[in-house]
Image 1 (tube, rainbow, N blue to C red):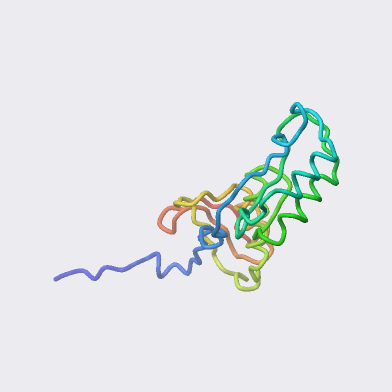
Image 2: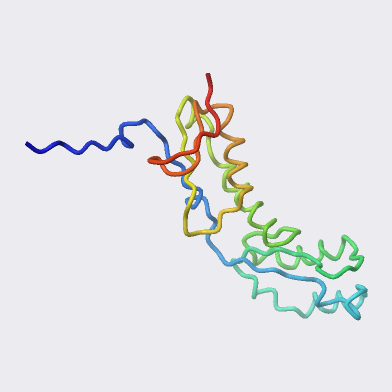
Length: 168
């Protein structure tokens, strides 16, 4: 007599959330102002405005752009603003900061579309491993969203989880 195979994970009532499902698709690029500084130290307004005027901003079409200055230089705030106004018509999104900051902003925006009520009194499992680069900040943000409403939050795979939060 054969025993019937029972999928206990399916019967557990766990709701799996895969952060890769929230991964914004598109190329990420870094625009570093250091490449447009005089002697790598000083931003000259006239030269910088000439660069902005002549640059082909179309190369940022449908991309996610992070703007930084990696050189130890004083860059006036208006310079970042000027870049932003030039890139905005083309890019999917623009942030001030490095690539890690860009990923944090993108995931925060994507996760803001979650309706927390969909997880009220549910046992949520936030999937751990995957193929796409999901920043730790996304796990923290999702946990922040779920904590007030979920019955429990776990990390990992439904067959092997690490408890994170459980309401009494």
